[in-house]
Image (cartoon, rainbow, N blue to C red; front, side, top):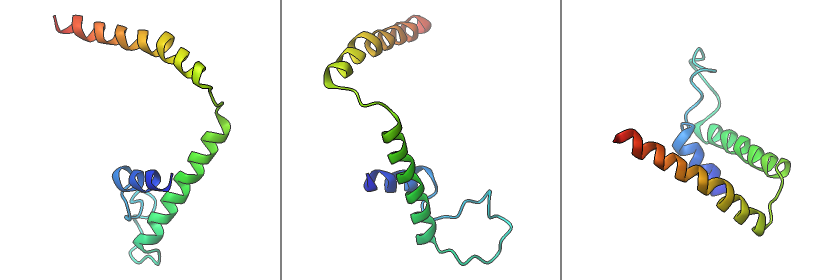
Length: 87
């Protein structure tokens, strides 16, 4: 979970850089890059734990049922839509 949050911060949230939208007017900042990185990581870990606690946990048979009866037909219909759009 920590590694996934660290990769998300690096790839999508600017890594160790400060949020430019919120703190663009300050010329001197006391918060270093490592602290910004940790603030972003702590926020993502909190979000990750919060979502895991809020959403229901599916059993294996429910996941298979969802995959085969819901997501498989949706993906097939999407592929057909793309295929016939190019013809």
